[in-house]
Image (cartoon, rainbow, N blue to C red):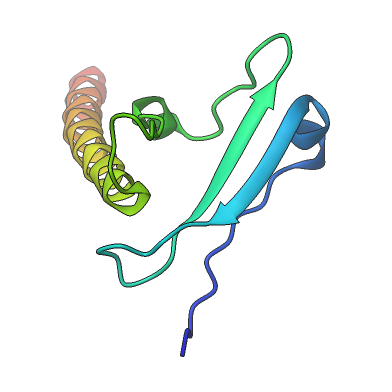
Length: 105
């Protein structure tokens, strides 16, 4: 029996600016839960990316990827690595800024 609810919310203004917004429950594959997929197609200007690391997300292509769930896990690994790289760089920048502030004091 499923004990988790996987979901996401889309802002009304974003949904209103797109020609198509649809979601569906995908096959679980190797995951311990069932991913929910969202498809957004719009006219005109592409909506802003709501999260920094969504830029690294690779779209699913049925001609290239065999299973949606496996592709989803691959994307999560890419985002995890991007996040780790960003955290290390941010920590270094913050430490440098602290050294500079201490020097000014």
